[in-house]
Length: 306
Image 1 (spheres, one colour):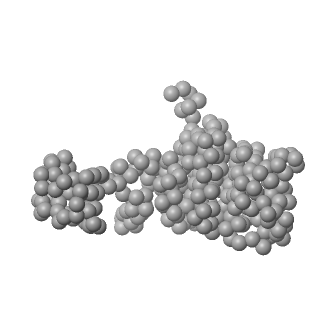
Image 2 (cartoon, rainbow, N blue to C red; image 1 turned 180 degrees about the vertical axis):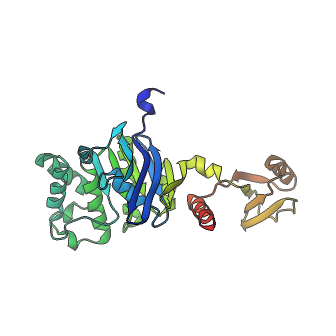
Image 3 (cartoon, rainbow, N blue to C red; image 1 turned 30 degrees about the horizontal axis):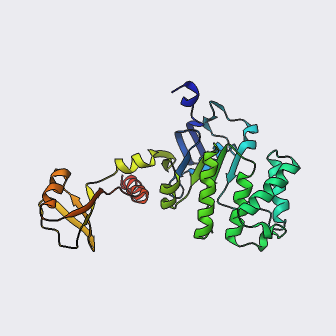
């Protein structure tokens, strides 16, 4: 790996943010590689929003530094950041197309480029017929699409999306998901914050779980799910039949010819499968990996109990 590849896109070093007597972010450090979709997770009040505000330069850390591409963050960096907060920041009385062009010019685009980008993205998000309507006339989901356009249309290198699927139906959620993947393929680094764990599993390459202002879990999504796996297996038999009683095996659930079982920690999985195959015809067997939702609950619950 050369020196350029070794530099994280975002390098957050020991940042702390206090509000009166409350410590929102506590000496937090995090490295986010370039060109990934990175999930920032945590329970309510964990410090995610405070961290995002420091990354975007809205507020400054009381301690620590935020580095972008190997250098300290500076005010001009805001031009190539797209930030979509959970709370909408649109002007309700302003027409959609005019508002988008205005917001994009604030991000440094020329009037002509802002007009072209506005027309392209309104068409892409299937909302072009509403371009001369006021924001207050739109549904929650349509407002969300306008906010999304305002976040990405100036082609930012860093895109921060806080609950981007709020108010969207399944079809529009899929449309936005596809665009997020395209933005990643075009080289953008995307920081994604949500409480919908199934979308984190589908979208994110890496995650960090923040609780009480510190990172308590981070890494590649697949690696984390493997790390928290238990000896649980999903088994499909060629025909529906009761599993024979086997020592050290607990049947967790059954649906037709599909079974979920848990093995005692001292039981060898390969030996068990061989033994079971002598009495039953196994069609499929796979290790069950916990969902990120299960892992989230487990980690946060353990911290609460301490």
